[in-house]
Image 1 (cartoon, rainbow, N blue to C red):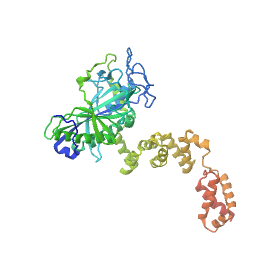
Image 2: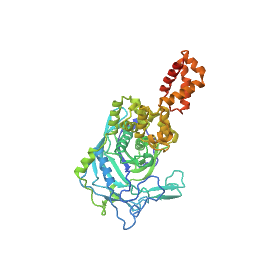
Image 3: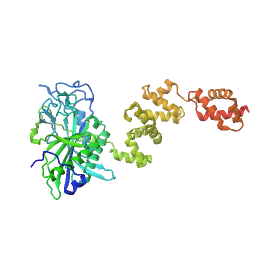
Image 4: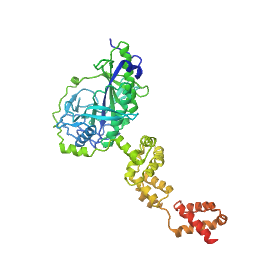
Amino acid sequence: MTSTVDAAPYTVEEVCERFDPVMGLEVHVELNTATKMFCGCRNEFGAEPNTHVCPVCLGLPGSLPRVNARAVEGAVKIGLALNCQVRERSGFARKNYFYPDMPKNFQISQYDDPIVFEGHLDVPLDDGTTWRVEIERAHMEEDTGKSLHMGGATGRIHGASYSLLDYNRAGVPLIEIVTKPILGAGTRAPEIARAYVSALRDVIQGLGVSDVRMDQGSMRCDANVSLMPKGTTEFGTRTETKNVNSLRSVERAVRYEMGRHAGVLLSGGTITQETRHFDEQSGTTSAGRPKETFADYRFFPEPDLVPIEPSAAWIEELRAGLPERPWERRARIQTEWGLSDEELRDLVNAGALDLVADTVEAGAPAESARSWWVSYLTQQANTAGVELSELAITPADVARVIALVAEGTLTNKLARQVVDGVLAGEGTPDDVVAGRGLAVVSDDSALTAAVDEALAAQPAIAEKIRAGKTKAAGAIVGAVMKATRGQADAARVQSLVLERVAAGS
C-alpha cells in the first residue's frame, strides 16, 4: 500500500539501526558573469522585474542563443577544483518540460556529455577527519525565471490567488554539480551533507566565479535521500528536497527525510518518488510534485549551438591558476600567524579571515590587521547593518592606515577618524588625512609653544611637576592634545612638558 500521511519520523540513530541511508546532492551554482548564459542581457540580482530580458531569454520565435565564454571558463575552473576530468568535446541538449518559469518550454542544458565529470572533494568534518564525496558530473545550463505566488499564506502555489513571473533570472549561467550516491555515512549523513555543501561553497567562492549567496539563491541544494534495509544492496525509492538555501537547512532536511522515510516504511507504507519542499520554521518537508525520470525530459541535442572543445593548453593554464583550497589556506595562515583554533574560528565566523589575509599581503603586520578588522571595523559593519566585506574600505586602505600609524603620521585615535573618512567616501586614507588635516603635529616649535601656553594657564600643575609629582604632567598633556585637536604626539608632548618645567625651575 502507499502511505498518504507521513508517519512520525524516527531519530537518525533509530533509523540507522534498521536502515542504511543513501544520499545524492545536487548543487546549483549561478555564475557571476556580466551577462547571461546564451544572450547579452545583464546578469544582476535584485533588478526590477523583467528589466533584464530579450528575445533569446524570453524564448521568442527566431531568436538564437550564443555561448558565454566566461561561463565555460567558470565551469572548467569548478571542475578542476573538484578534481574532475574535462571532456574534450561536450555539447548542449534541450531538456523539455513545461513550467511557466521557463518561457521556451525547454531548458538548454547538458545530458550525456557534461563538460566535467568523475571528480571528488575531500570534505573536512567537525572532528578533524575528512570524508571523500565522489562527484559524478558538473554540467552547464541556464537558470529558470522566478514564480511569485501571491495571496496565499505560504508563498507557494497552493492557496495562492494568482502568480507573477519575473524572467530576469531566466538564462542566468548555472552549473549543476551532482554527486555519486553517498554510501556508508550512517548517523553522520546529515553532518556530511552540510559539510559537503559548506566545503563546496568555500571552494567556489575562492575561485571567484560566483558569490555563492545561498540567501539570494545563487547557490542552492537539492538533497536526495533514500533508505536501504540493513543487509541489502538495492537502493530504496528516493525523494528530492528542492532548493534548500542554507547550510543548517541542508542538514535538517536530510535528518528529517531520513526519519520520515523510516516512519513510512516501518508503518508498512511505501515511499513516493517526488520532490519535497523544506519549511525553515518547522524543519519539516512537504510533498511537491511527482519526480520526473530522464525519459520524461525527452533530451535531444540543441541544434543552435556548436559543441565546446576546450584545448589542453587552456585547461592547463586554468589549472595552474587555481587558488589553494580554503581549508588548506586556513591551516597555512594559522601556522604562519600562530593562531589558536579559537582565534582562527573567530576570524572565520566573523567573515574576516580573507580580509585580514589580504591586508597582511598589502604589507600590514598580522596582529594589527586582525585588530582593525575584528574590532573597530566589525563595530562599523554592525552599526551599518552590513557584512564586513561590504564596508566601503579595502584591505589595501586598512594596510595604509596601519602604515601611517607606524611611521608616526597618525595616532590610533586619528587613524579611526581616517577610517571613518574612507568609509564615508572621502577617498583614500591619504586623501582623508590631507582633506581633514589629520596628520600628527610633530613640529617641536609648534608643540613647545602649545606646552608653554598650557603651563602658563595652569601654574599650580607646573609647581607640582617641579616638586617631583611627574604624574601631574598628564593634565598639561591633555590640554595640549585638546589644543591640537588630538594631533600631537602624546609621548613627545610629555617629554617637552618635563623639559620645559625643568628649564624654568
